[in-house]
Image 1 (cartoon, rainbow, N blue to C red):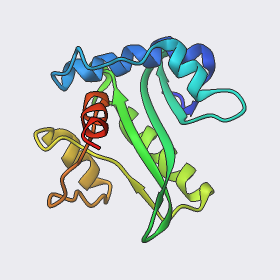
Image 2: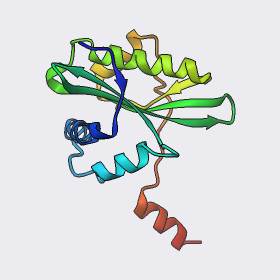
Image 3: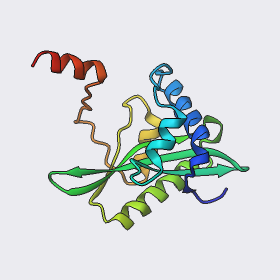
Image 4: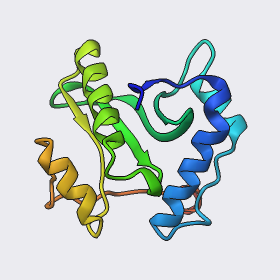
Length: 158
C-alpha cells in the first residue's frame, strides 16, 4: 500500500464514487448532490475550498480524506475533516489509519489548534477506530444543519 497523496483533479470521478459509496453505507443514497465538476471546480484552481488526500491499493483509489479550514471563536484555526472514506472491501487493511495520519500531519503543518469531525452515533466501528487513535468523541453535542429548504423557510419568515 502506498502512502496517501494529495488528490489530483483527475482523481475526482473516483472520489465521487467513494462519496456515493459512503452515502449508501449511511442509508442516504439519494442525498449526494455534488458532481465531479463541482469537486474539480471547488478543489482546484486559485482558491480551493478543500484539500483531499487519496490512498491507493493496487493502483486504484480506495480511500479519501477531505478537509478544509474552519475558525473557532475559542481556539482559532481548526481543520475540519469532512469525510474519511475507505471502500468497503478495503476496510481493516490500514487505509483509514494512513489517511488519518496524513490529515493529522497536515494539521500540524498548518498550525491548527484542533482537528474536528463528526461520526454517526450508530457507526460503532468508526467510533472505536477514532477513539483508538486518541480522538475524543463528544457524545454530548448535537450537529445542527439548515439545508437549502431550511434556509429558504428561514428567510421567508423574516
